[in-house]
Image (tube, rainbow, N blue to C red; front, top):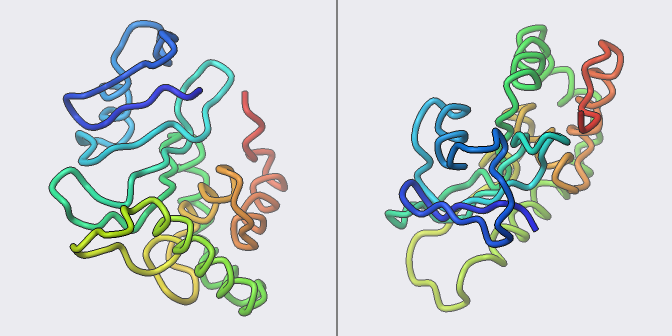
Length: 175
């Protein structure tokens, strides 16, 4: 079971497991990775073997009730840096060009449906919109697609990113 946190002041460790650095509160670790305090509930969806968070699974609503469209958030500094480099080299446009448009559309729909299932059936407020990275079409953020892939989603853009990172010897392998 992953270490979970419900928000900035509400970290929980249901199994009594140690936090990634052995002592610090998970919210402190995530705050450092994000550069700000978390604004909603999350779990660690993917972690390195040492427990360091790689991907967060966000609740679809922030603590104040605002929608959170990004279900899976890549927080690993090394992966963020190398994917940022890929984006700077035109990776978003290239991925959009080489990935099958219908598969990408299906990915956005699947992502949105998975996120929506987490909302109470009778929830009356605003809900998150869009698919991966909050967009309904095309590619907005390679980081978001790779996070979804690492978290177990079927994502052709995430797979494309993984292949590019493998060519550079930078793909995620759990270590």
